[in-house]
Image 1 (spheres, rainbow, N blue to C red):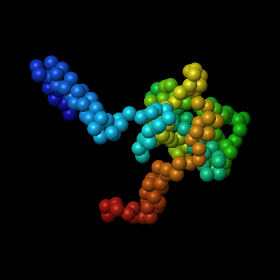
Image 2 (image 1 turned 90 degrees about the vertical axis):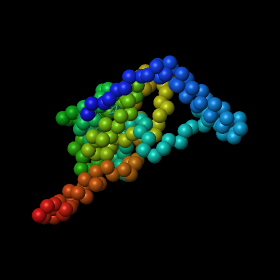
Image 3 (image 1 turned 135 degrees about the vertical axis):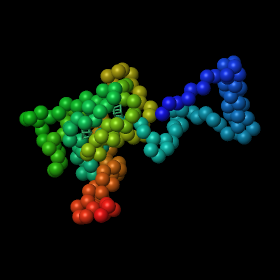
Amino acid sequence: MVVDRKPLNWWERSYLPAIAGGFRVTWRHFANTVFRRKSVTMQYPEEKWVMPEGYRGAPYLVSDVDGHTKCVSCQLCEFICPPKAILITPPGPAGMAADRPNAEKMPREFEINMLRCIFCGLCQEVCPEEAIFLQKDYSLTGLARGEMIYNKEKLLKLGGVDTGIQKWKQKLDEAREQEVFPVQGSAS
Ligand code: SF4
Ligand code: SF4
């Protein structure tokens, strides 16, 4: 589809509409603060935003309900990550086994460079084990660049136990339906 990009007219090129729009916002906040006693600022960091449902903040690893590592070191998230923020060290042939049944391995180390991460969510989308989720943290700070590289231990601690999201549940239900032949809903 070709997008029609209209050139600015002389009135828009004068910047006056944009300036007037800016003053309108300022005046609205001024009026709300003075006349309605409705503050538009907050005393951060003592007061913090309550992030809406679905907000995508920093990605952390999660453990299952028994405290086992869900990540199986498949490295899909590492390959998909656009800014190359993830660095996984697999266990290797003689490395330690997974700490849970039904898993072949788990990462020896798993690092996310939060200075690079753009909170895009692709790692969460691609993960076959539901092991990494974007959570609600938006304010990540450190005194040195090294502190912003979160290791496996820190990611698991921050991620906590399984978030309860079952992103593959729908796929599983669909797969179960297809075990019956003819497939339900298919054309006869
Ligand atoms: S959220 Fe995006 S940028 Fe951040 S680690 Fe995941 S894939 Fe990489
Ligand atoms: S977090 Fe998920 S996608 Fe990334 S290595 Fe672990 S299991 Fe694979």
